Image (tube, rainbow, N blue to C red; front, side, top):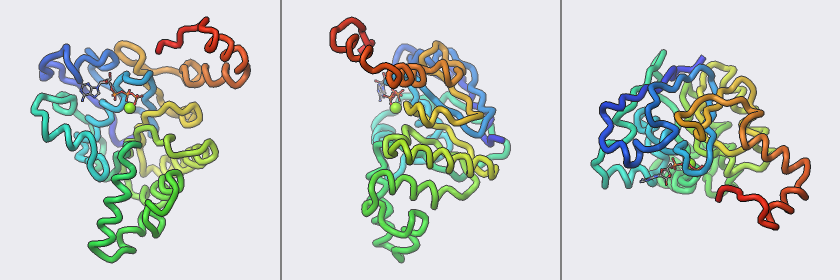
Length: 251
Ligand SMILES: Nc1ncnc2c1ncn2[C@@H]1O[C@H](COP(=O)(O)OP(=O)(O)OP(=O)(O)O)[C@@H](O)[C@H]1O
Ligand SMILES: [Mg+2]
């Protein structure tokens, strides 16, 4: 059962509703996002607001983006109300441990662990990450080390495009890790993804940010599933349309 049961929005607190982040169509006017499963996916086009929501939830949980990064920089500069200021998280029970992973700050995080290793006994710093510096492991290896070694507390894991590091085979391995952690009753995941492999995780709820306001969608109805399947079944037709300019791919 998920620990974080819902995310509620209080739009009365929002100022400047025509400006970022309050103008994101998927979120505008939304009262509540219910989280009824251990695994929730956020899908939608580039720029539809998935990272913005994840960042707000992470901030509310008190997680910094690992090793610093965009939000830390932004938060010191900007005094405007953010999405974090208008959301309320409902927990049962309240869980304090967890993790916010942004694909683009994974490198900073690896450096942060190296700094900790220099300051104290190195093994204390590296033990949760497979016993060696994350910089000495490939992107995908480091990422799976993180999951296999670090994610064993009861916690909530907010992951932004974890597939960025993972080969298709490792994405499957990662589904196994999610399943193990979710089945142990110790973990809840909220994952923004574009991966048709990750999205296929059974018994997950998928929220579609291409709707206004967003709602749930079945796996088979997502663009990710549909386009990937069509493409793999008949890529020649795609190329004909793409290269002859017959289809406008909404770019
Ligand atoms: N700090 C900011 N100031 C103004 N606009 C922003 C800021 N950060 C993001 N945006 C805009 O908000 C929208 C949502 O961005 P967000 O990063 O949440 O999208 P996303 O769904 O995560 O996309 P992607 O799939 O490409 O990662 C985009 O149009 C983006 O340009
Ligand atoms: Mg994003």
